[in-house]
Length: 358
Image 1 (spheres, rainbow, N blue to C red):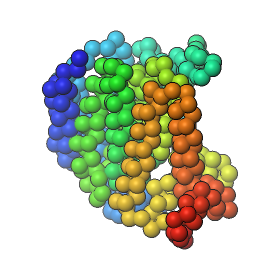
Image 2 (cartoon, rainbow, N blue to C red):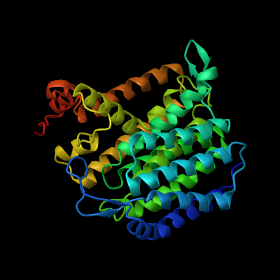
Image 3 (cartoon, rainbow, N blue to C red):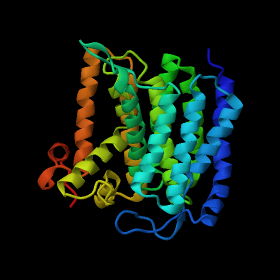
Image 4 (cartoon, one colour):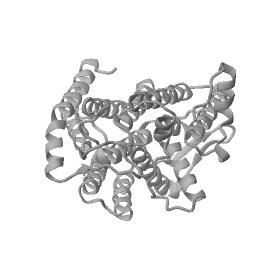
């Protein structure tokens, strides 16, 4: 059985620690010149803002860990990987690392995880059953950690967006971990949620501090790792798709950005203002409304993942159909559909008699 008071106290310790330490981290970031300056090619804010706020999230997690002290054979390797990804993000916030150097740090964090024994070793498919990855499981695990880290990083374009989406994703994983009685995942997600929410008090619009690559990479890493410990280890049908559903928004925004840049023959690392959150702003939604809309999408996909986690084959196929419709909406909002057409969204507008924003 779960020790409910212990879980609540761990959550509150992480939340309060992140809440109180964030102003200190803000002053440290300014002193180290870890600041975010306006950029017409990508960023929306005006004036210089302190970055590196992810350090406060990390400190909040450490505070929660010191209290709850979960026992797990792979925990040391996970913590070492977290430190590697955190340092990588901090160095990037301060010195603007080259993409290759940043990727090296992400791979190093992934290596720490797989060398500790945490790997994606199998998936479950209908009719085919369990498929084992054998030797390529190490590569798949590292790719998942790198992909999730970059996905959260790329969606970090509006105040409170990445932190809120991450908190929602972690909450979905927490609920599934409780249902499956994966104790270490319950502990880790709970302190991560508490720390992220504590930081979000300072980061929601109008943000006083940004999480920077320090926070985005760390949260992406954390989501990837807890999903490996919890979601990839279950025996549900289509087990591989559950973690993807949890962070649908950042993953597909990243995929669409890559497709967009390949079509335009641009470097994959080219910055632009065509991510889904910027598209919402162009459609006339306010900064706060755009963030809340994406929170809603994230919560919807998180709920689908929870249902999917223990669904029958028929329900799983139905959820996949809904999931694909959601992906279609995301792709249309992100402007990937050629010639400016948005068939699905235009169909919805026609049904409800709404006009399309120009």
